[in-house]
View 1 (tube, rainbow, N blue to C red):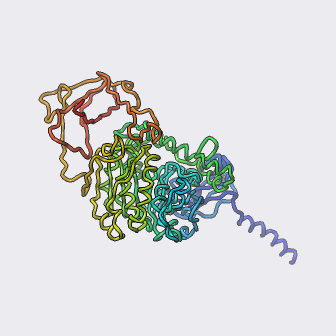
View 2 (cartoon, helix red, strand yellow):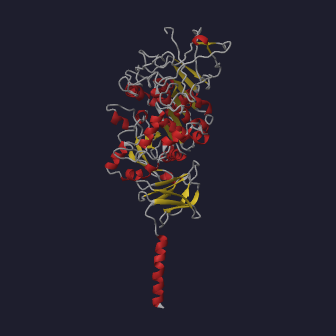
View 3 (spheres, rainbow, N blue to C red):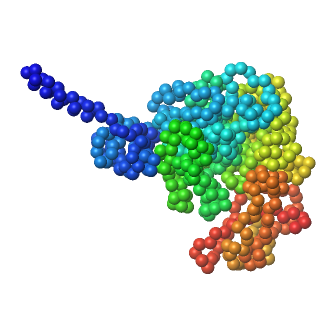
Length: 611
């Protein structure tokens, strides 16, 4: 019997060990996704449901990662090698609801300055860099900040797929300006970019929930004043605020998006024509930046960190090859498909934003386009909202008049202190800001009545008495020299479209005239369409603030007239009174063409008395 018992034990022990055996890879449930890492490259990997039925099979990428998308939320999923062997522990696939199953993830500790990683609800680590207000003095030697009180500081989040977490400074970010205002800024790289883990997809729900997690984690830190945070940023860092705020993080104080879009489709396919001038090139850059970091791909700063021994950054590259093929997505969606386009179009969801909002955009933004004002009437979720619109380029959402109001807004709704406290610092630094941002010397901030009020209550009341919509007209004409970013005049309105505006129609008429009434009889003008009749671009210099650059005071545009016979042109009679045109317009024409598909562009211009 003793030997029999001994033999029985020996037979059972291997069975118990086999049941407890764990796979050599790591697997996690995410938001409508399941991913696994530490696999052998090209290994066949299967996903199983809670009944053990195979759901999908994929090959691991060259870095040993695999990502299953569009997985139904629920529990009991497992991952295993298709060739057999132990499977993962049961995995929970999360829904797209804003709040996570547990808020324990927000109890992680984040240092009050410097580089690090923040863990999202699915375990993915996002690369971040925390810039306390003092960081600006490292970049601008000799700059004196106003005395900073000890303890927590007002905090802002800047979030995009650019190299925001780069320790050398955020790429295309504006955190230093917020440092000047007295804010700590947390710069965050979106998942699947730089040193952040995960795989990239353009504003997928998971990316927006990452924003929610960042807000809730940072607001929970002891160094975040009021245990609330705001968001700031321009362009990509502005657009991301709209997506994040729509998830309604409980501790989000306010947002301040600058130079944003209303609709991905109108930027990518304006009028149904692929925007190869900016949008397509931008998409190509996002594809490159989402690749695994190496000497030839991904974000250069991430490759540098890996070379210097950052093991977390290195491990986080595993899922980068699983990024969605963004260019294929662009090609497959040349028409508006609501199921694809609506979730990517802020105009369809900004009504869900319920926090104070300050937004500024340009009618003639060469990057994000001029449709941003269409968002105004859709911001129905908050009564505390202010908008500034002007002519100008992509960076003109930082013009002095707009800057003042943006600064006041952040002080009042995030810092919750009177703007007068830090106004001296921003006024002193203004010439340097505009020299760097626009390449324009000698620009200062105009006087601001809100910044003169001594108490928070008085300043808040004055700000909230401002009309929601402010339009700066003829920016570039209000300074002492042409092109300085000051408006010729401004008007404020209670809403947009502006109450009391009247539609005005002109009619294409014989002889190249635009008449006030439809012409009698039928008439048609013809021209020969020629893609090469005009140069492909009207500007060939630096596209930012470099010498003669697009953002400078007087960039050298090369406006060319269409050669005779290659276009049709119509002109009104001279206007008999000063006329302000504001809002949307449309050109309605009947067209007959000798080919089935022709791209047409209508340009509306002011013609001065000198011709």
